[in-house]
Figure 1 (cartoon, helix red, strand yellow):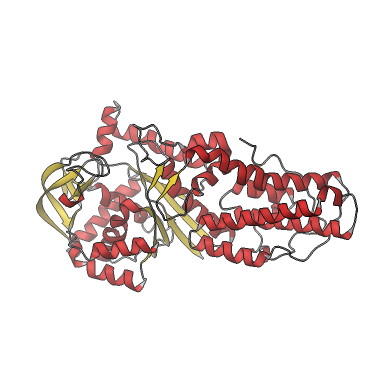
Figure 2 (figure 1 turned 120 degrees about the vertical axis):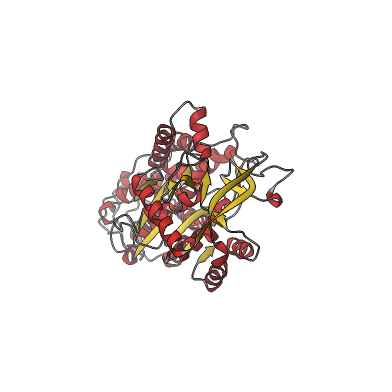
Length: 490
């Protein structure tokens, strides 16, 4: 089955940080899980490069906007490579394929009667690249950027959102557009029950952007421009990705754009709508909002340098349940890494393989002492529900169960007996490690592959998923080798 997964495209006014990595990593994990079970995921990410804010930041840096965008977009690609994120496509809103697709889509909207021209006076936050209302302000300032918005009076083109609100509400209530978790669905329905005004699709006096195809004095509003990346990278790009999107990962702060504005534009254009929008919450760093001023911005490249690719992936995705607000405890990274990776999975693999290599042990298939089928049922359901913390909980429970067997059976003494019990105990441990490696592969792919390789199972990675989940897949003649140090202690 084909799946189309997307992340929001990231604004290039600053370098990638852990917040960008969080959303992108979640999509990569789901993509890898889908591949593992035999599906065909197509995973899109990219960068959002137009708008007045980017133009200003580039100017402040003494650079041409395109030159500035090239540099920052490249940094996102580097960060994703370092984290082992394997996207299918990386789109930039300065790509010619995107710019031509935006022009095409806007003409469709205009021809359908979904657009109209009017004057608008409102409060505009340059940081948000968005018009905001008085009720959104806190002490007269934008709550996200702590700055007073400017009063803007412009003649723009608007989208008739009012014509589509009732239909979107109906589709969400019926489940034709699934919004997950439940709080995000409730928030979207609440928005649709309010007086949400028609929104602007263009701006005056913004030079860095895509001109309206019928009016060069107007530039496509940056949010409309950005939302269309999912379409310009798919349906109008030799149909490389299946349309419509199967799952779209977004942050809570951009829910309105993706769950209201985006479906409305697609309805107006007569196109199929995304099937599921998955929303994650806000997070803080050690109890404080992430800020350059506070100096608590976490660079994912720094995490990779210290903890390795898999260690960084684990630390980013494991801090709190996906979809909820939470706090990243950076001061606990070493403790978490050591407890669950170095002293957990890494130590178990090293310990059991070392004893096995030093002794002449034959493997004999055993019954399943771990209830692996139940563990797999839990893992598959957790991946389906984006409950990555529950996947990890199941994996670490199996690791702890193996550790108990190691201690209770005293495998270093049992290995000298050459008994059938010894052969079955070691088989149980290695077979459980095979399952652990497969379960963990989407989250810690390098370690998962190395464990399989140490079990002589690397060539079986692409085997039938249903068969791989069954107990007894490890052969009795498996060539077991102690792997390299998977997770060096910190």
